Image (cartoon, rainbow, N blue to C red; front, side, top):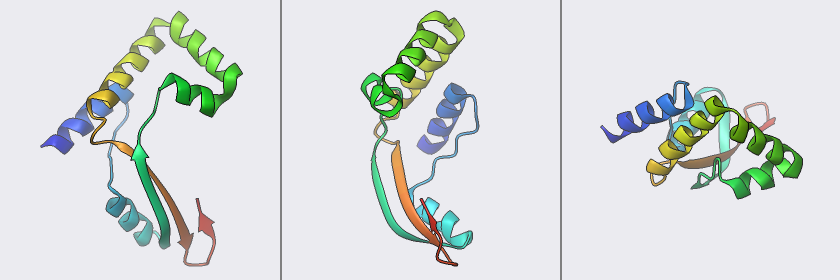
Length: 109
């Protein structure tokens, strides 16, 4: 029941279909597609965190993003709703980083 609530809440906030998977879920998807997982890492999501946006985007793009949020009510509303949804499910959501190799030996990062 909790998973369905997370999926609905995040889908509504992001305006897309949201289908979270566990490490095992992603490993199975990759295995079925012909990849072998060599390494995986997990951690907390820091999406829409101002410090993370600055680190990821750099000062110029971060300033543009901030300007867009400050001056466009529809963007601001969506960002606020997305942050709310992520924060309310922060203990159940996180990032998954996977390094996998195709059966032909080509890496997928």
